[in-house]
Length: 616
Image (cartoon, rainbow, N blue to C red; front, side, top):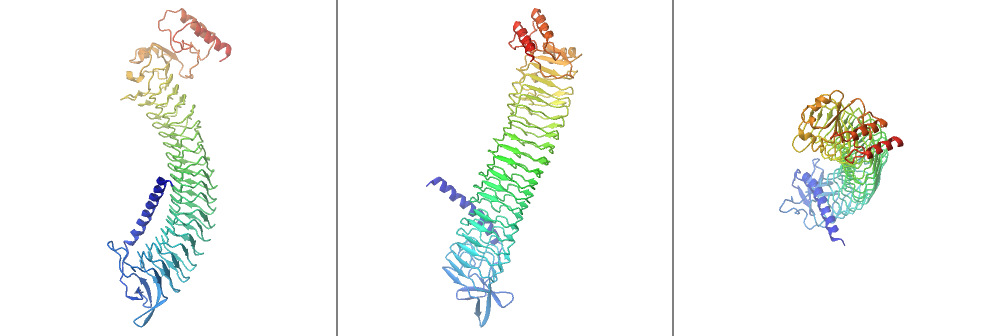
């Protein structure tokens, strides 16, 4: 036997019992204890308001010093249908509130015909009560009537029209249940904690399964009625016996935490009429591999499938809303396919899905919320032209190599693409006016970035630790590049070879902004007619190679384009030959050193000729 596992199960069950008992005892604290009017044959009675009938009541009020004072040492009770007191006959019509509470030696009770009511907590904590018969005259069984007893089977007749909450909560030996045919609701807490209850057939008219109705029970098989409409919160919480759930088409609503922590649940089929999957409804069902959604699901609420074992998710076209953290932490999830009617996906909906390699973004979506795919190794992403905002940490840790941001996007949040280490090139469109801080921090593979003309400010840490950057293009409207602390906005520029600045007027910057740049090798490109302004401007003037370019032309580097005319031809060969013959000590730069060996010589000329001949 695995001792550690046994202890774990035992501790788990103790925790569950503690939850149930807390619920029951909270209701007991508000009860009034009325004294009995008389006793006959050791049974206490209280005369009812009609003066013609009586209710069975307790012999002594239990208290914290003597909690089991009631009917001491009684093992079996046969309650008569009537009783005579002082020459008058009284019909026995009810078992009163807490009448047999705490009768720990009681094993059997026989109820009389004519009994109408079994009161609140009437047999609560009768741990060894094994057998009861409920006559077909009973119309009301109140809250907790048989809670935490040892009954093994219970048959509730069709006469019962009022069934309270927690009636059989904590009946750890209960295995067989028959419910009234006309029952329309399984009351809250009805079979909570009934560990040995494995199967049940729900009556044909049931429309609602109440809160915690089967919570922490041993239920494995359920025959669902086609009348069922709603499953309330925690109805099947922690039901480890469930391995598959196939809901009827009639179910339109699943409440929050309805199937939370069903640790062995593997497959779920949701019916035709389901409108909403409630918050945390299947959260932490760690073995849940597959969910088949009905065609009319519109809402998947927050944390609905968080920390499950889902591998593939395909959402129907009907879905319009996905709540916060709905699929967070689904570590086995590989792909997500979403329909094009989704207008709102809340923050972190798919975060920490460590195997998620593919997900599409609906064309109906306008905002990519913060943390949406954080820590997901997405290998590709297609951002639709409907998107206007990309939230902070939305794609943190993604694995895509290419990124196309549509010109519909106006804002990009903090750390939106942090640690996208496979990303090599990014172009921020002119539509972006709000570019936050640390957006591309730790993108080690990033070699080129183009900032659009809508960006007016480059904030701290924008490109921090992007040590592989070779080309940066600054937009024409940048007014400030902010540097403070240890967060350089342009990161380490030690490998930077080309810096394009579309602004014709040099802005003031701190020297630390261009950290570790090789001013003798890196080329600064400025708009035509503005080279002299940059040669006299602080910091910018440190660039040895300041060249003019047409800011309306693409700034993508063309290897071998020595004379910067966006073509590679014989003119570039001639330019190289002139430079080789020149005595200019600073003739070596990122453009002229074609083969990147730190020198200009015949090898560079051969490289350009080979490019021309090969048509590269």
